[in-house]
Image (cartoon, rainbow, N blue to C red; front, side, top):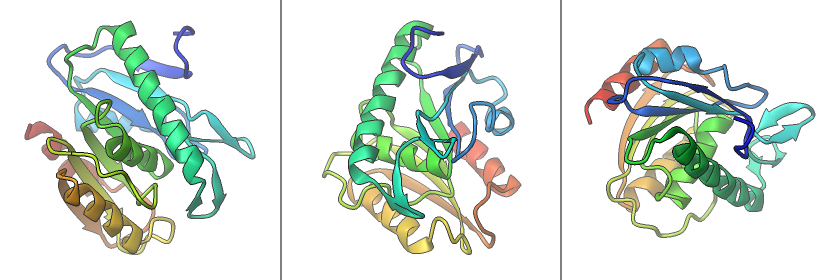
Length: 204
């Protein structure tokens, strides 16, 4: 819908299924995680925006200064931009009162993590694949009632275990419930991770 602030794909789904907010990785597109969404819940409505930042022509959710070094000010600004878009889409598609679960990979997982930490009014549930702590000192917000599934690789050079563990710690110390699944691989989404995330979504 052209009147919304971010270009996006939208797919209708069952009224009793959670809305899945799909957030692609660097250089991706709104279509990237559609297959994953189908495995998580084939009945779910899908909202898949495009990252508004261009890095050499590659779509991203926020700027970075170098590999693994984020522009914190831009992370915060883009997090609020995405939260505003979620509110617009909720109005446009009549999703008030509906359960919303973000599903992100890499840069998309990092913006979903930022949403969870900075804007719990906009997002309370997130599935994060290959994620890390997006901001160095998140505010001390009450995240009681927030749920996060984190699926990361123990050998991921782009989302190091130390930063992923820092994200888990930041979430838990603020009251969020976090389920962790670690695989021995690198920067990827595994079939086991998707299956576990689907079970995690279904448990609520």
